[in-house]
Amino acid sequence: MNRRSRLYSPVRRKVFRRPKPLTGQTQKRLKYLPNTLTLCNAWCGFAAILWSLTAYERVPAGAIPTETYQVLATSSLIVLGAMIFDVLDGFAARLLNAQSMHGMQMDSLSDMVTFGVAPAVIMAVMTHRLQGVQTTGQVWFTFLLCSVYVGCTALRLATYNVKAIEKSGDDAVFHGLPSPGAAAAIASLVLAVKGFDRDLSSFAMVFPIYAALLGGLMISPLPYAHVGKYLLSRKGNQPIKIMLLIILLYLVAIFGAYTIFTVITLYVLSGPFEAIRRRFRTGKYAK
Image 1: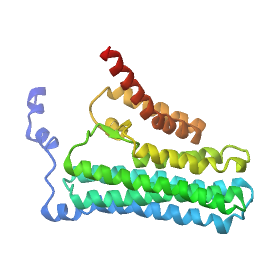
Image 2: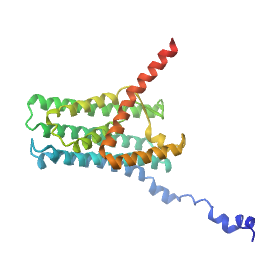
Image 3: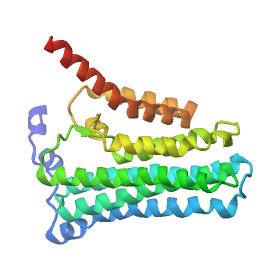
Image 4: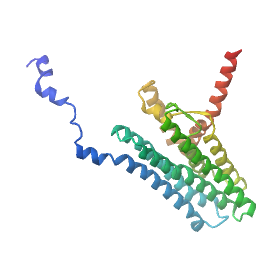
């Protein structure tokens, strides 16, 4: 048999045959997968909150900061891990054609727990434990600033839902810092501080202030790139994407949490810088 006959033989065609479509029963079972992944996101947020609160029992007030960092670093890792479920639920919904209004609302509610309440609790507990005995004014100051973060997350998610329903938003760009980005900024800060072998108790109030600033960025009109869609899309230079990912993983392996904190901080700052760049370019062209 020559090469041409082997190429078009029935056996050869059978190898490249497309997979059979999913049966009705299988598709019916798989349609619950996106919502299950969304619930895993919410469960991670709940676990992060509970673990953060154990710092009050495990770590005495004013104890060695390292002990506080260890407890809250675990909570931060749980929040970062929840982002995997946050990405996978949307991917699974599109893949299985299971997108629905119910799924969108569930996703936002889960994000509120994991990327809204959990990071605020982490910041509040961290401030309380580092300061030891707080005055009434310090307690209220911490509460109000962390409440700003929670409230801004709720406003951010509500605005996103409205735009998604009205289909008035740009899929490639976020208007305002996305809530997972703000949560990642807080979680990476805790992980970076854990490796910073110094007593930062005198700077404890900086943490809730940072959380409030992130909250303000969430409800701002500043443009932020949709990094997840860019990386998963076929647009752009794929070899460059792979190379950047390899470099990032290499830096994480060497510098650990400092790399994650630096990358996320650059993303947080990209919104204001992009807004300034656009305004400068518009003003330049207007002259």
